[in-house]
Image 1 (cartoon, one colour):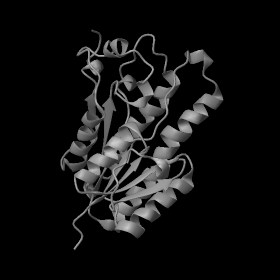
Image 2 (cartoon, helix red, strand yellow; image 1 turned 180 degrees about the vertical axis):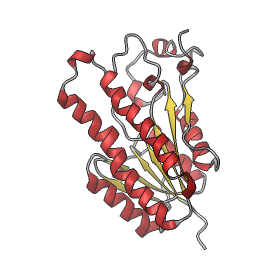
Image 3 (cartoon, helix red, strand yellow; image 1 turned 90 degrees about the vertical axis):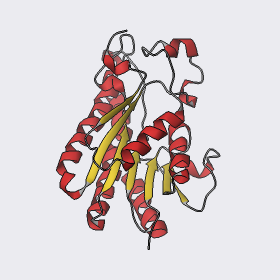
Length: 241
């Protein structure tokens, strides 16, 4: 009898993705971890319960390989965490169509390729499942001076898709939620001054990777929560401070 559930985690080689992978392993899950070079990552805890799949999430072949690996190694897919994403700022009029395509390929198409395959598998298993995707509070609460309009087009798309997926598959017990972190202490911010980053939330604080992992685990295992956006941002989504 299978006791371990299996989670798929994207963008898993460092930062939040590595923290998610390690937290799910500690919680007793099998994990299929994917990113461009996840096989080289030194941030993942060694375990017989983790399978690494290298690939660009924007490539539909990566999604195919991830699902096939999950089923071959562990026999099921019970949870998906869409963590992979890219983000960069520019004045709206300076974003190029190439910028849009790059953002959309990873953030939207990457979500679409893998989530479709995972939902198809969950439907076949008839045991429900969880999808949690990482977005940002800036989808609904822009910050003056942080010019991210086209990046937010893609992150907002993830939030919209998640809510609609939640409704479409509620009767099948497949839940879809999002976690919206504020500033998180990851390599992405290693060159940014901490005191400035703290001003981006009313609690004047920066989240740790474990806080985001805890939020994702909570939603993954919360049987009656679907279509929710869980903000882990020190109150930044509340408005002006």
